[in-house]
Image (cartoon, rainbow, N blue to C red; front, top):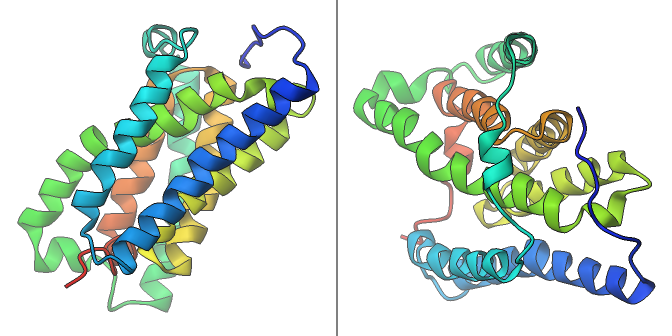
Length: 226
């Protein structure tokens, strides 16, 4: 299935305001966070809550936004097989690349710090994945769907680019590249199914894989300000 539109035809002024809002939210706030973290030397865990608070306020202010539909929509065994099949191919290729190109990284976290690795495996999906998918997929495709009604593929591409840019405060290209391609997969999955649970599962699989095979360091570098 694809996400259906419930918005009436928007005026040029409405479209402009929605574009501006989207860019301020998904470009302006990450830039502000990066400035606060690297210029103000504020730790990530202290800079993140106010940003999330602003996003929550925007969600609440949109009276047409509800989590009930995406949270209430599941997905079938065929979709699960597609998710797992894609993960086996793409995830396997990524793991093989790390094993060959950067063998010193491969499985470094579970080998050196198994307790921290297990903690990440359990907490990352509950905290990071849930937050990111509600904002970048559920809210994004509800709030800004009218901008891409004539070109749904553009909505997916823009979503992936904004998702990648949202990780700018990690300050390294591997994190940006990984999240861009991850964003393409997750955005396509959500527009295909309309299910939060489908995209959250897929995000969890790839995210936990990244931390397991040794690429997790790209998502920690530079954020502690020590």
